[in-house]
Length: 429
Image 1: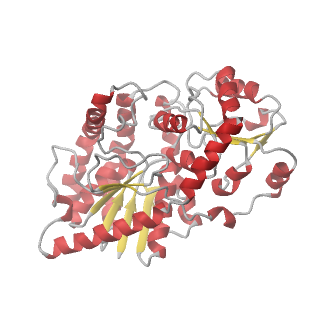
Image 2: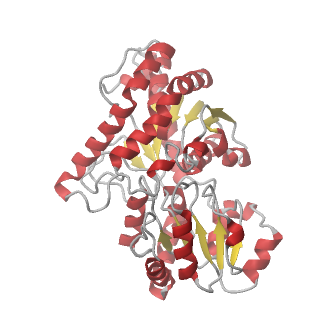
Image 3: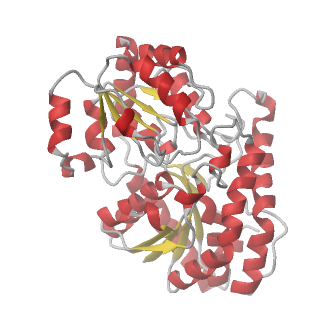
């Protein structure tokens, strides 16, 4: 079968979908991923066919730009939805044309992140199944509130309602541009309401987030989507990195991925004070931090394999993105989480509840004392033991295989529906 996978976001959004494509290809199918061009490194490395979608997510995350404006400001769900909508709405028509062209002859479209409404519309046009794929649990449940809201901000009896409210708010922010593109690109009627009945697969570990008991059958927690459980074995580190790791005790890894727009001076000043003389590995990512100003005990790294590197460090300090959260935990290492926006506080809270991290360090108001407490907690023998326990459990999962089997089943069901004249996207409407 042939699958088109469409996503739009940061590298953390693209990387797991590239791994999922690799799994589909290894199972004998055709798969192509469409995403922002700056995030396709993982697809290239895995030998997954890819096409760049219009837009520039990295520029949008720079200070003063659309997404950069919500980083470092304690932005709520409404501000986040509006910022994301600005990016999507400016590119929706182009994305719909690009996905429509790429998906010709496909048996299903798998869509994620900011490209979700586009993927759903194109699948409707082509009369093929639309399968959601996400690293953020957005299916309404009583088990926890919407991940886009601060943990603890919503009482338990309103958890399910919070998901419906936030999902509806996002749809309203995207609706006008989505409907305009539906009409202009696909000759489809505008939609008044959000999609709610399509299947959605989550590249999330059940160790971190067990499947909620009240989720419908079409929502499934599959496990982390990584290229393979031993992908680190195929990565060779630079000699300088190997030498640094061999020269002393395991260092603290520090990296904030695609985050930019925060107060770099304040964060790094507090962090350097808290690290003191400890050995540290620092990955600048998209932050724009001037690594040349770091103390001598900081070793600066570029792109690395998390699967190779994280088992060799003492703990992982990160922004709380779903991908890094999973990779740190699967490696059996505690985290120090420094969330800035979006669902990052949700993952910080999950790690704290599981005993693998201290309460989060506020990325918008970091202090040396908060970093020191979080680092101290992560270095405790009990925390290290708990992280190893969680990592062992995660390594027993095979999220890619589970998701591939589900996609094959859903695509086959879609073929049966089409054979009797039913559009798979509207089958539950």
